[in-house]
Length: 366
Image (cartoon, rainbow, N blue to C red; front, side, top):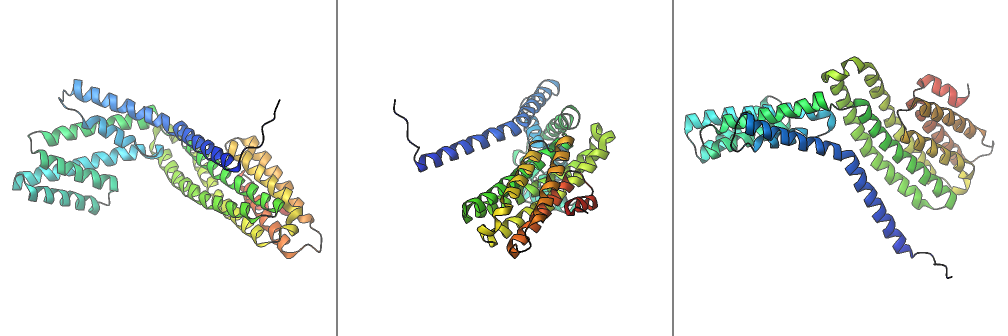
């Protein structure tokens, strides 16, 4: 019985690419599938209301308005619905006034469009309002049919109202869940970067370390998304009835999530210190770097679990204290890496929920 030889390097590379792309696609479906179902449900309900209750013969805008209103970050769907309604109302009012004063025509369309957009700008409206005001003005003037403006307004109210009911009452965003999802993505990226940095020391190859830096650059993008989620979380906690009584833990977790910015910076500083040092000088620190990557990976798997956080803090303390046992004649580069590693451990402990002062004492052993 013959044994198969190793796969060619190119084939292994392409298999990894395909597996990675498939995994990414499945993750997008997992995270975006439920909002898609909600949007479909909202569109169907809006069409039924407009067609059978209001008795519009062509109620196409009601379901469109519902989908457009819900097609944004889950923490911002209610605001998006209100913006859509404001834009439609503004555009229709301006266009109806322009048609009444000037009649239908190219000049009227241009005037209605520019005036509605400028008014939205003067009011400090978001781009959603500006776009919807222009679209409503254009449609009202271009069709120039009696009742088109009011009918579109009614459709917008139906679609936006259905979107508000779904986003605020039936399926409101879960602020803590949204925060933990973004925290998990950022922590996973940092963990992978530390593992790559450890591999660079083990193999004496700068390529994994360079990849670690690139990975941390992508983590910056994830942290930017986390920043947006933090703002939306506070917004949701203030304006969604379901979360009014649970606002305190939401605010506390939002503040805690801000610690990940410092942790990401510490991971980048550690990786750059590793690149600048001689690999042979860092061999005693390689296990600690890998262990710290394991700690972040464990946190990424369950950032909301108190026991996981406590375990991560305890492990980070042990790792940090272990790096203080370097020989007296250890190279300066190794000492710099050890200091950066302790900083990563410190920021990990603080993210886990420990007071910064206590975290410093734990890391230094004082």
